[in-house]
Length: 264
Length: 272
Image 1 (cartoon, rainbow over the protein chains, first blue to last red):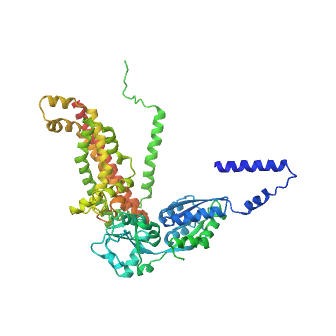
Image 2: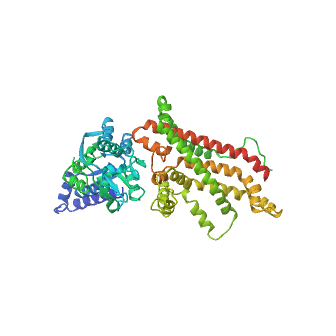
Image 3: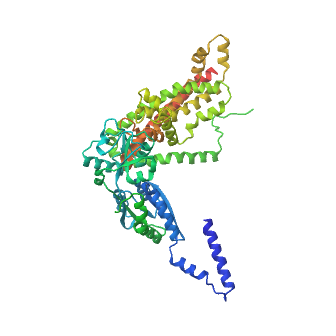
């Protein structure tokens, strides 16, 4: 608010100054004025799945840097929370979901501007505490009697992926806890409470040294696809569309793949 | 001489208006929730296997937590109300900390205390007690957040009742334990009861610390609030129905607490 006011004041001063010296060549001010007229301007709010936190924070910063005059506010939470909020009227301009199921809830409510575009994929990986105390080597080891395994509950996306992978591997998992979010699973592993957890590859990358990741062949059975879409009621429709293009474009792909996401 | 008429309430009208707004603020969300309940499916939703398991687990663990609160909370309140020692004020603030602490923070603190790699984790492992992901962990989390409620309400009652009768009892030769058993506890019994009911209610609603510390598994650690949180992901109808069950249980508890408080009032009045 303060920034906007001072901007208007500055613009006013500039006009007065220009009018005062009509003979002077406004060489310095003209190009920037044309540029800002052609360039994007406006504020958008992006609702993005919690697993996109670090990547979207980076992308929003570089997007703002490339498009001065735009600001991107970010709101991260579980995809189902976000879509519930948007359908209930939350002021979002762009929605990036961690699965197509929650994106469908949004398109069913006809709140999207254009079709959702898939921009990333994610697969499960076994996360174990540093040192791998339970000596987990592959997916079948997770079913061991002494292994304290924590997974997502089947009601949430990471949990349905877990169920699909377990079925494909022919392994019956007996977890000690079924958490309602992948961050809770990761938390139980990083704190050493659990011997192993099933989280996304990107969670393992983001956790750094706090956990060790173990790939397994069956992970390909449940590939999560991330779609993004601009919303119909976007306050700055062109900025929202530009941000979607930015994420689905090469800049987005670079950042996402560095964080461990796969290409759609 | 002030004339006290029967109808005089002494509450200014503007206070009443503000009170009405405040009451509406609390009641409207409840009304909104009741309006969202799918009544046709209500009974099947709340009697599903997972719902019943969650409700029973919640009642069981909350009762255990309340018992622990009474066992440890009554002595804590007595020490805080009846003794005077250096650092007592600081100690009281610290003991009451779970009242203001976000439950998630409580859960993290418990994890670093009773977790497998926590301060006491090794000790319990040696004793063969496995707290992680067990119902014990739920009870610990609930006791942690509920204990201050009993301590706070009982300490206040103890200070209000005063020490007159206790001093008389002691001068007549009663031992401290006899004074406690025959004089102090009967005097503050209503406060113990209402404090216990408050603790039970707090334990029943416990969510954050349980989620962080105990995990979530049907029948073992997934209490009613955790079940509601999970069902909300896929089945909002069940979440709303279970929320209503929790509200009804909470209303019953508050009513019982009020009743016990009022019923015991004349006795307290007669005693003083």
